Every structure is written in structure tokens, then in C-alpha cells.
Image (cartoon, rainbow, N blue to C red; front, side):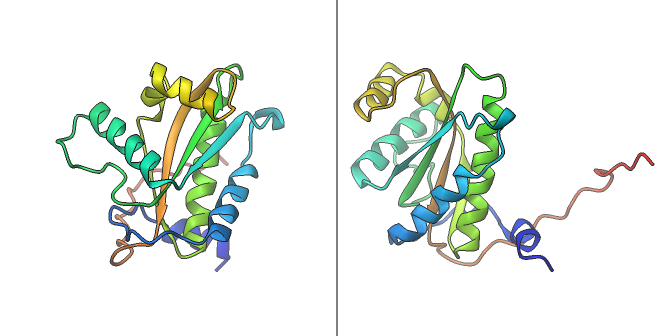
Amino acid sequence: MNEVIKAMEERRSIRRFKPDMPEKKDIEQILEAGLYAASGMGRQPVITIAITNKEQRDKLSETNRKIGGWPEGFDPFYGAPVILVVLADKKYPTYLYDGSLVMGNLMLAAHSLGLGSIWIHRAKEEFELPEYKRMLKDWGVAGEWEGIGHCAVGWIDGENPAPAKRKEGRIIYVE
């Protein structure tokens, strides 16, 4: 079977990660894969912020937890040590789709390297907060960006989950 299609079929959302940090070269490869996602008219209106600093990661996790309404002590990133925040430039009409394609590439790349990943929402709400807009400016990011998602990445703690049964009737041929 084709390796790309095999990765698409085998990749799962992981909800338990080991605390061990992946190697920087692996994180770089995942980020590079995100750069090659398709985008409307080739505009590439997406940036990815790689958060490997534990203090910054934990702060983001706590904000995400509060937005999600979970009890204190819950980690919406499931212990993943790397959080890749995908942001898209809102001035382009395809920004949401472009950012979503980047997220897909990041997750497939992580899987191809033996790492687990999961798409975590609420990046939109986080980066609408004044504190996070200031944080972007502090990181040298100017402009109007919308949070598309967080790709939490790390070593899987346990087994890769089995796939859910695929729903019937989701492919229609018009011949």
C-alpha cells in the first residue's frame, strides 16, 4: 500500500502522551510538512508557532482548560510536551481551510515519525484575548491572526487506538 495513504488510514488522535520531549529534528520535520500544505491561490497565509517551553505550554493549557470549562487540574493537551499553534491571516478568504490543511499535514507528519498527535480546539478563543494578542506581538507576529487549532505532539503513552468503524454511504459516484 502507498505509504501516504497508509499513514492516513493509521493515524489516530492520541489522548495520552509521555512527558519526554521529541527530538528537535523531528519537530522541525513536522513543521516543514506544514509549510507544504495546499492553500488558496498558493498564498500560504498560515503560520505555526512551536511551543516547547514547558512554562508557556502549561500557561496555554490552563487558558484552554478555562475556555473549555473543564475542572482545575485537567490538561486539554493530554500531557503532550509540544504544542504547535496554527494561526491564519484573516484577510484571506480561504484562511480557515488553509489552516485546516496545515493541521492535517502536521498530524500526518507526526504519525510518519512515530509520534502521536491530536487537534485541540479553542485556539480561536485564546488568540482573541488581549493577553494572547500581546503575546503574539512579543513574539514578533504582527497582523490579524485567527487561531485555527493546536496540534499537540509527543510520544504515545500506550498503544495507538484502533480505528472507529467507517460510516457507510459517505462516498457518492456521479458517473
